[in-house]
Amino acid sequence: MEDVRSTYVFSGELGRGQFGITYLVTHKKTKQQFACKSIPKRKLINREDIEDVRREVQIMYHLTGHRNIVELKGAYEDHQSVNLIMELCAGGELFNRIIAKGHFSERKAANLCRQIVMMLHNCHSMGVMHRDLKPENFLFLNKDEDSPLKATDFGLSVFFKPGDVFKDLVGSAYYVAPEVLRRRYGPEADIWSAGVTLYVLLSGVPPFYGETEQSIFDSILRGNIDFSSDPWPSISSSAKDLVRKMLRDDPKERLSASEVLNHQWMREDGDASDKPLDIAVLTRMKQFSAMNKLKKVALK
View 1 (spheres, rainbow, N blue to C red):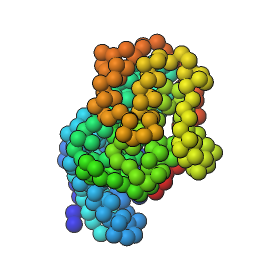
View 2 (view 1 turned 120 degrees about the horizontal axis):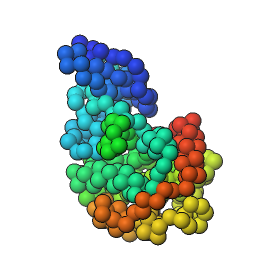
View 3 (view 1 turned 60 degrees about the vertical axis):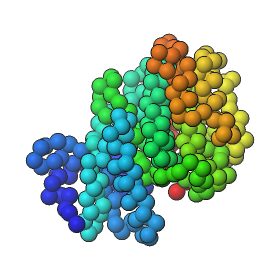
View 4 (view 1 turned 90 degrees about the vertical axis):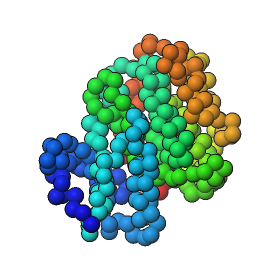
């Protein structure tokens, strides 16, 4: 048992998750700032909850060192709570930053999606499935133009071996893969979620929509993707080709993380255009993001 407050000073709240609250903390000696995810033990009701937190810590230590994954600096446990000290990502949420900038292009979307898929490639090659990939779980490290994008939440992530089949329904409604809804899935489900994210980045709306969780699921299982409404006619065929291949209903036909990174639209020297996207995309993205914050649609 080690008291986190003997080393760090707690200040403002940065955000609230399903289990815990994230605070801004300052190291007493070095004056360096970090984020601290504080999980009250009274919320860890059964052994499964405790295992989930333990696994999150293990996975973050396992993945640490990758440019697009938030770094876990230390874990403290006292009588009241489990405290995870992580590097502070002060550059803001993915959508908020795009909306604030006010101009966006296919090339910028490709750059952001590339970072998300590089993170996934790293996870999958190290035997970790993310299982809750969505824009809200990505933060920019700082305010710099070329700030790296960081995955910050591994609360639903699991270790896997090739051929493992998972059956538990987890994730977030708009981003969940059809095979997760059918209760037989593997790491390909993460690629689906990244494909949904790319669709939203390019159009401002999710590919599968519904007023209720069930109607979103029905839409996902029907699998009709709209490429005819605005702005899709003005989006390059190369971008649409990649989205289609990431959103294949059959996980065996879906691209792997390394295949996505090698796609001609996604490569750093690829053919994604620098032409600004229609401003309506940002307006819709803002509405979708605000609505999501109200709903907080999580499955677990």
